[in-house]
Length: 293
Image (cartoon, rainbow, N blue to C red):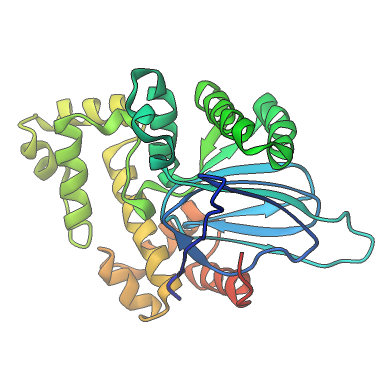
């Protein structure tokens, strides 16, 4: 199932959308949109899917920053005696900041919103600050709200209290350390050729490195081996195809570069914690409902 495309109407007095929602279930449609989303929830039980990654909703305060066009859904149960769901949702586009967005002082926020293409999960002390600030944002007058929004984004950008959610293979986007021309060549080659056999030497030749030097270089730049990255790309794309449900699992394995089906199952389970068929069932369990966000 491909994600539904959503759009939003902005209030004349505001350059971004902010709202508070209560009650469960709150959201359940698998969708994407051009706007960046800040999503904070507390209360309720269920699960969320961000790109190709599942996260539990456990009743505690949780917050995500979701980049433009990153598919996602949140699915809540409706159990007796369960704490009521409260959520604050913000939708914005970088043009809201105008020429101010290009100032050098905005570099940290620009990097944050770029990296949010993979989804960012807030944690630690920053999450406690965000719980207070996000609920306060709902009550702000328009002129105050834009200042608070900037402070929220800057606080997240300057903290280390977050982790990425969707895999690089799913989003085909890269974090700050991949910006050099060498790394761009490597990523471009892999994303165009992951469906076939790729040798380490073949990739090393692209940037004119010896095989050993390439392996050290890639590990230093990314924190993982090249083959681990290639597996992430293949499994990330397999997740997309499982969600679209237009091919059977064997066809998906071959389309993602696997000639050995048992190897595909082994690597998929190692990365995702379940079999491809279970992953697909879990996905459709999250997205069967057509309610909108």
